[in-house]
Image (cartoon, rainbow, N blue to C red):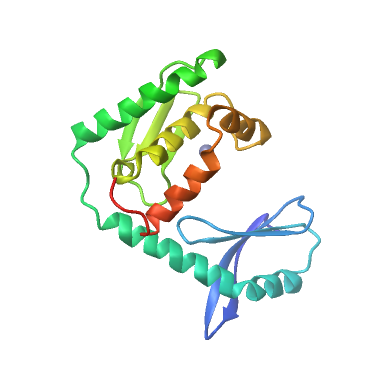
Length: 194
Ligand SMILES: [Zn+2]
């Protein structure tokens, strides 16, 4: 059987489509990605019936998460694209503030790339030393921008989201989880202007 398949289960008159990946996990994991896609990972020997039942049992949770993400997208898409020069100046200022924290780890100043994105706040091409930031962050509260910048900088030390990554984030920015939640709330439309 293919390691990754697409499936659908009925839910409240419609259906929930999900991507199933078979891998060595203990049980079942379900998550809703920022683009609203549903992703499930399951042990290779777990029956499809069990997995489908699990997904439909989590139907209400999935729908609520998808609705919230769709609201986030509408809210951020409603903002006009920020002026490029101002955006670059703001992001560079944030980078200049966060970069010294990484100096002990031998991190050099990465190149900044700006992009309008709907499904992520930033990304890091750690091999080429390029950090891409979502231009929507221009409107986010400054602590949230700094959080995203530091997050991407930490990927220059730890490319993945393993324990090493999180302990580094925690050491350099003790309230990073709070800022992450703040960013989610802001994107959700509860936050105000910058
Ligand atoms: Zn990351």
